[in-house]
Length: 146
Image 1 (cartoon, rainbow, N blue to C red):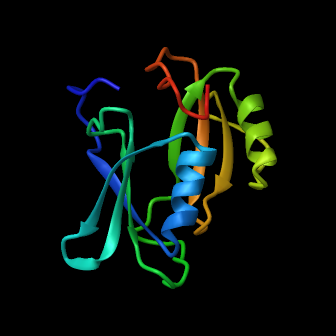
Image 2: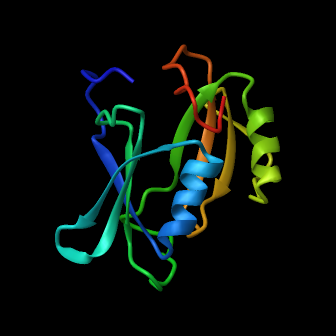
Image 3: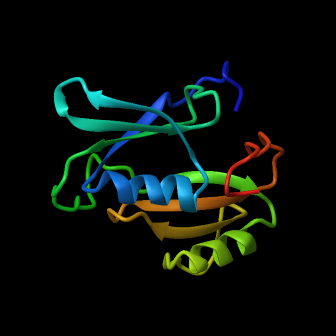
């Protein structure tokens, strides 16, 4: 990610279970928990920040943790899916990894010439891994995903 590249600053979602959220995004997807604060409007709830090792804008996905909140419904103004880019050829690795962590994934499909693997997080939010042919940023060292 080029920090000077214009685009989305961050995406915020809601989770009913902070620990399951951390286990999924850090343990399964290999994201970095770059910051843990409280929700400024609701200091009784956590605000989890995932992103690259430096927390650059554009890499950040955050969650407000509201225990017991019902699952969301798909529709406006919700995003269809949150997508992560991966190197071309990486979807076989991701298919195995998701299966090993008991995450049900849909068979890979081709969209706009790129392979896409779709699945859901513990709260039912749709997540995708897109095999991108363009050279991207190297994966962070020391995490659970090579």
